[in-house]
Length: 330
Image (cartoon, rainbow, N blue to C red; front, side, top):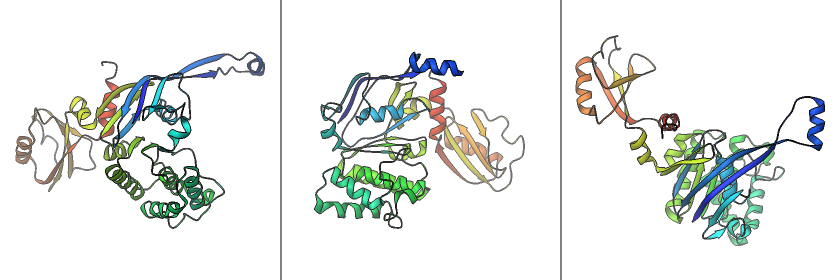
């Protein structure tokens, strides 16, 4: 569906020089530096794929989304949507995708959210007979009823973001780009959004490219991860494959009937006790290949008064941090 081929983007930036004289010289003879935001990025997102775009600040995530939607032109390379260049056929391609930027507004500041959604429906050529029904569906899904008729300028950040995401979906796009869409959203709103995106993905085959600093959101929604580092695509894998490659460890959580005493776990090889909330709860990092979980539980049961336990994967933010720590070795 969407394909990026060897995409580059370089920004020319005026060098700032201190002093009044330097400021005046910059007006007539500016000095420039060049920033490589994207360097040879290539990937494909097929129909019905849920893909997360992960990267540190300045890695090029927002630039990539803007190029994929035709907002920015690449310095080199090609972006194709259903085989057509996004930049040569922008109007035609724009009808097939929706986009929401958490840090920029697309709705009209002085209008209500409902009026903005109606305007977007007309801009995207949604038949007049369908616009009202489509808006009511989005109002129900994102629970916009309390503020959908309020001017956008009077909304809280979380309310506005929910309306922005609804606006990106009003024309039933085939691919949705969401750049930091959960900024300011509460937990329930995030859950609602994920559920709806999964539903339209399952029922209509809608593809999603999600960028977010909330890696738990990315993992709960997406099946595949693209990891950017300094404008380069360093990994394109499923989350399952990433865990196998970079994080064989798991976390064992224990609730105890009595507080743990110092020295109770001395002599147990292959485990790492993680910082915990109190001495009644324990978190242990272990490698299930080297220390099978049932054998570890048995050994711990001889030393601790265990009430219950839970085995979890290492949190996504920790193993992504490990990927960045080991990038030089790769």
